[in-house]
Length: 128
Image 1 (spheres, rainbow, N blue to C red):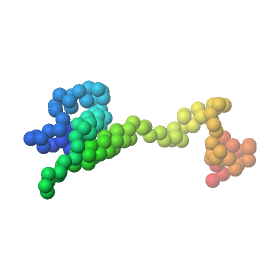
Image 2: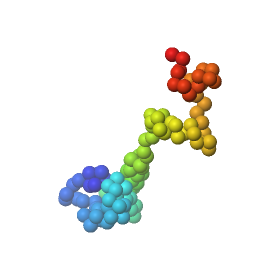
Image 3: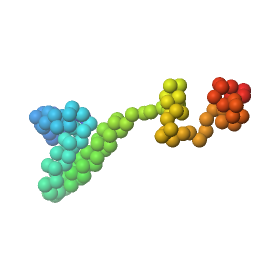
């Protein structure tokens, strides 16, 4: 999870191991959501710090805040992309038969054999 939030410097960790465990627990073990929560927590630390300039040296805490807030949004987006399931219709004969016999289901506008004479429909003969 440290990798996801960019907290990889062991000498200057931005979030503790206990905080990582807490975020993982709060997000049910979902690493991406926990990383987003950690990024928000890191951003909160920089939110209360002002930008500083001393001579030629400067520290831009507002940029760090903005970076971690944007990172949290990006991580949440990545986490949500894994929630959708793909459905492919029309590949199972039993599902097609169930759909065709369901009076409440929206029926397809096009189907195999639709241009055949009514007496040939459903006979399996597509006129080929």
